[in-house]
Picture 1 (cartoon, one colour):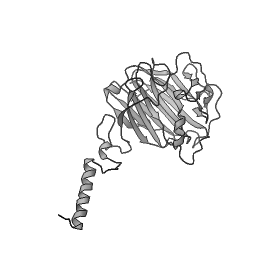
Picture 2: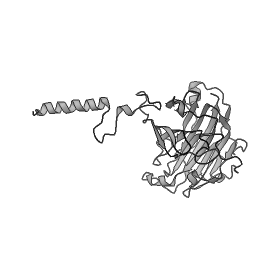
Picture 3: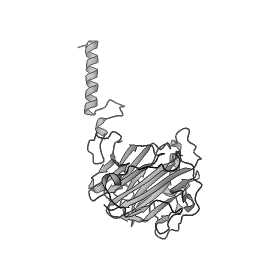
Picture 4: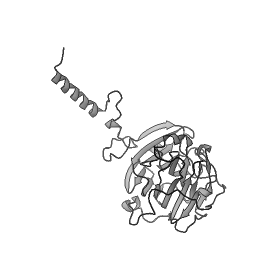
Length: 323
């Protein structure tokens, strides 16, 4: 039986509509409505800025963390930081999750206004970099004009630091941050790390990891990622999410960890959420700030970005709240 041209066109249109509605794609299709889900697997159409959340199993990729007890560090000389895309912090109120949800008075905070890091509050890394690539140096970390700046050099010299006051079992953390356009090898990270895990690339004995802000892109800094690691030490599960945001401008990122859920926020808006109990950390976590170097990612750097220019990760303030 043959179909008239008009009938065939109508049939094709109806088939296309059915494919879109049911989520069954043609071969090679890249968009499926059913993939727009939150981290708990529920369908969500409320915030289309969300990239698909997914649970995957992989070798740990982007963990680093609170240095081993006794590691030597200190603020060191202030770095000659590469200039970010904008000037000093803008005046006026910044939308925050703390203000929107009434988190109250911080139990710990640092506005970096004293011109130096307080050694009683911060432990600055010194030693091998992420996956033993490059080197973490105290000289890469400095405070000036009310900003904490971590600078990454083309040779893999970079920095990180752990907040001694930033540890608790469940809680809320928030920080105002920005970064410059730079080589894709550099990943700025705000993370929570098990307090009993020691340093290294995976927490000893498990314990999970909450990367509540990581920027792993082509160096243009137009996306932010959330990585929630859980499970075995060297082969962990993770929940991930991505939100589109210009990270070369100031934004307030936050994480809320309760006994039942973990949520991520940007400028007071929740964009990541899971209630998956297996993914929740089993013990206390400490706060770290890092600029990690993944040299094999350099090849993904966008055209027009100078690989040899310093990468900078800046923090205007950071605060911790009780749950």
